[in-house]
Image 1 (cartoon, rainbow, N blue to C red):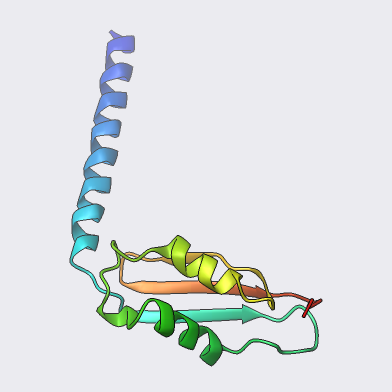
Image 2: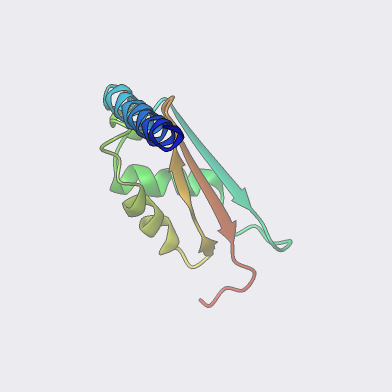
Length: 113
């Protein structure tokens, strides 16, 4: 009997998790990008890259991100676009459920130009 209750509890937990993921997916489909947050960590004393430069790169390639749906936004495309810059060492990008696009850039110490 105890084994049956454990299995039943596990099934209920899995169903609840599936419902939560489905609900979040439905909610995100109607959300456009509300905020673009760019964070640049400068490892050395020199500043080679500014937020305005990154915003311009995104605007030139993607267009106005504030009109894009958060689900349809290609984060990997934005990451690879910014990573092509010789001053960028690492660039993870994230989206949040409330419509924030977060881009965290780590500038390189050495530049090979």
